[in-house]
Image 1 (cartoon, rainbow, N blue to C red):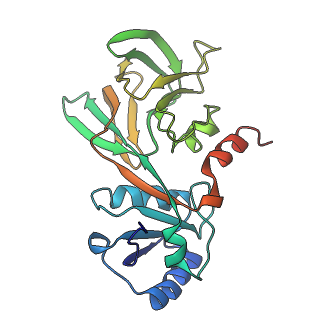
Image 2 (cartoon, rainbow, N blue to C red):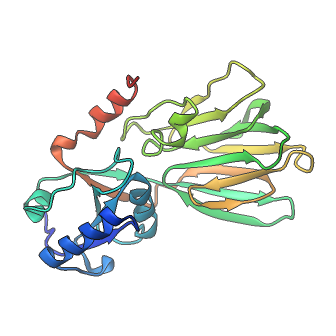
Length: 257
């Protein structure tokens, strides 16, 4: 059965190439509201693609990204012709976000979702001290560092990769737990965890060494405890051209100079 991708909602980043593409494509294919569309086409780079996934997480339509930005690891090539036919032949990938629950020094609790990663980051010149639990078991009594992050496979090629974390294949059902500039233990490079893992970060000496928690674009300051788990109740659907071969890109990224 062909996929019914005839009603398209186009969304674009603020960059000029993305806005120009938005104008061309809407005149050619029309424009629908995201909540009424069969598919959402995001025009921009990887950052905008993940922002679109966030924004339209509750929409039933899958998202097809076309590269009109800076980084295009998650994006398909930009092409104006035969878009509806092209959409019929796409491959769908389903992702699940991370749910962050953060407790502050003032006793407040905040929740946020992350399609990319949840990061603990020191707020001052003082290094952070963090204790780490996985599924209720203490795995690290004290890590002295600039921070730590836990990421999804979709986010593993972003901030995680820049701090030498592993690139994870989509559909691998694992998460990466990666230190950020760890001073102690000096040789620890992180861990790969099953997607069912519940990771809890406890901030040590929070008054002297304050830490913020960031779930993609949502930041909570002065946290004392942060719990992160995958939220399987939320599914995010992304479409890719068959020749895009995202799995090949993920393998190639690990051998890039």
